[in-house]
Image 1 (cartoon, rainbow, N blue to C red):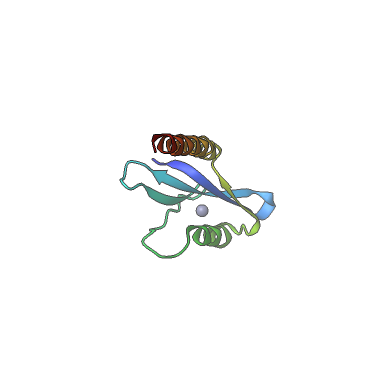
Image 2: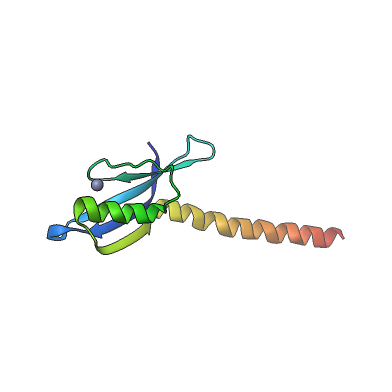
Length: 104
Ligand SMILES: [Zn+2]
């Protein structure tokens, strides 16, 4: 099983919230992303040029009649991991630039 990195939610009949997840499987190199519906096990072939979000919205609307209140959210922990990595790279870059400057 992969890690859910992004959620697409929409509101259907009776104010029920439906969710389609993008799951990233890191066992592959490069990793592969899968679309998986949390409610009916729908998981389409991604051998297509169509956008994942368009496919997710279409499934939510067609299969679950959920077309209101569409929202796309990144997984919290995944976002945090990126939030830590970026400043780290920035600091590294400055250090390298400084070293090159001092060495010349
Ligand atoms: Zn579904």
